[in-house]
Every structure is written in structure tokens, then in C-alpha cells.
Length: 193
Image (cartoon, rainbow, N blue to C red):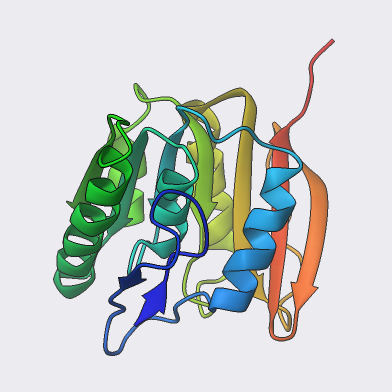
């Protein structure tokens, strides 16, 4: 189990997959959202959590004010947990009078990205398995570029042992934070003249 750190569902426990995923620790998730609080407005945000696992990153954003969260994972077990966790967090948010929606999609990230260009997101989480090579991550980010607007923030979680990826345009690194074995990159869309 892990917990939602803050917001409408703060303190609620959510389930994590038994194996096959590396959930973001509560400590790292809290640090990610502390950084995001200074650079992003969660109110009514549209969020996608790619390689969602338990959905904890996307659902934390929902708890903090996002209105629409899409959780994508290729593992049927993980998607089942995302759906169950989504119902728990959505109920807590709706109990405060907010209208929210959570979508749990049983797809590979590549399949989702290939068909999601017509959607636009404000916040994107990419927390792939640490063994996903930088080339594959960079290809995924290239597809993410068509799904975000100019004010979007993209959060990428990687092993601290890995070299920094080459960030495809239009993304630029706004901040980098390292927490033990985890490095988190906060990307923004480069302003055009």
C-alpha cells in the first residue's frame, strides 16, 4: 500500500502492484509535488500518467485539483489497481463537490501515444521501468509533444545511474532533482519567438 499525500484524498491508502513495477516512494512523490506546487496550477488540469503502475502520480494530481486523469499501463493487473484506486480517490474528490473523471487504459504507452494526438494534456508523468533505454524514452517524448500545449509540464522519472536523455524539441529541462536512486526531470515546452 501507498498513500495519497495531500489534497481532497490526502491520507487515503491505495494499493500497489505486487510485482513487476517500481512504485514511486511516498517521499519522492511528495518531493515531486512540492516542486510542482511552485510551477504548476493543478486546478482543472488534464493529466496523463504513462507507465502508471498503481496510478499514484496521476491520482495525487487529481487529489490536488486536477479534473481529468488518464492512467495508462500495459499490465492488466496494474490497470485493475489503477481503476480501483481511481474510484477511491475520485469518490473523495467528489465528496467535496468537485466533478472529476479517471480513465484507466490497458495499453502500452506506445499504443496510447500513437492514437492520442487529438487529446491535449496539461501535465504528463512518464515513470517508465528503469530498464527502458533512453532511445525508447526519447521516442515516447517525441509523441508526447503533439499532446501538450505551451504551458504544459512533463515529469520524467529515471534511475540516477542513467545518463540524462537527449530531450527532443520542444522540451527543455526546467528543473532536475535527485533523490537517492531516482532522478526527476521537470520539462517545459520551449517558448517560440
